[in-house]
Amino acid sequence: MAIRLVVKVEAAPGKREELRMSFASLCAEVREEPGCNQFEAYQNIDDPDRFILLERWADQETFTVHGNLHEKQWLKMIDELMASSPEAEEYTD
Image (cartoon, rainbow, N blue to C red):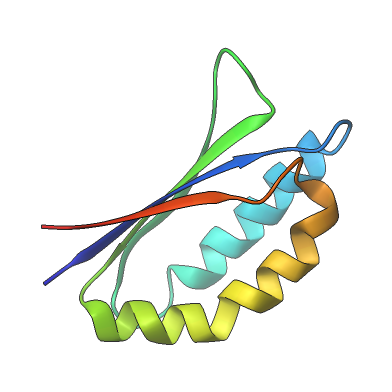
């Protein structure tokens, strides 16, 4: 069963562009991972400090492998770029 992850992130004051560039780099890297069907970042039109990541993974196993590779390391790297912790929700088909 496919896994969909929706992650909401808000940039810290003055860190919007750095966060946007971090997402661009991350998206390019993660799209190459096995089982990744979608990994895209979008910036809110009305509030450009707000971003959303849309992820879709082939199954729970590939999603778990991705999380083990990136989640803690990447969140630690961008911690100072975020106004608060990201909000994530998981869905399935």
